Length: 239
Image (cartoon, rainbow, N blue to C red):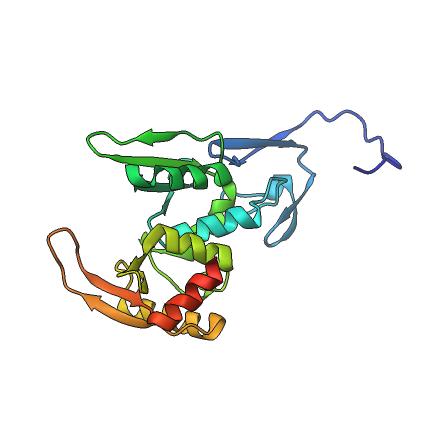
């Protein structure tokens, strides 16, 4: 808060413009201004009357905390996905886990949006948590190309230890109580190799890309495998 030190009396405004932008938690938000009001855009300052549909403007809002950022990053590399609403253009975060992982789902919900409801899915022992937030607009193009999730160095470089821990809890397991493996089957071999390089360059953890054949309950694909020493280093990192 800062004190008001001066004001300018311009008379009563008779003409107003309503600017509709995506709401913070979905829906729409209305900004009411005069036609000559200065608006910050990604292409410089414009008067409100000169704005066009799909212009990007700066509006006050609540940013995601770093903890929320890491939960979204880590889980989106795993089972979570982000959908783009055609109506509001505000992406929606959604993740589904089995009943055995309900406490983990509650843990993520309490960090991301404590007021959101976790709903049981019909005819399935699984639960879904979803929420919308205007900051997800920046995440969608990071993770999706032509509506398909992909991985790249820009995403990985945003991760810290907590984000990696969330990724492991979401989509990793301790094979034979010896080896850390990440279920990255939805990514291509090249994308898995990007992960291997990231683990080596950033955290000095050696990893390899393996391939599993399709089975009755698995589509198969490429995944990340850490040897025994690297597994211990990985678990120490996220502990």
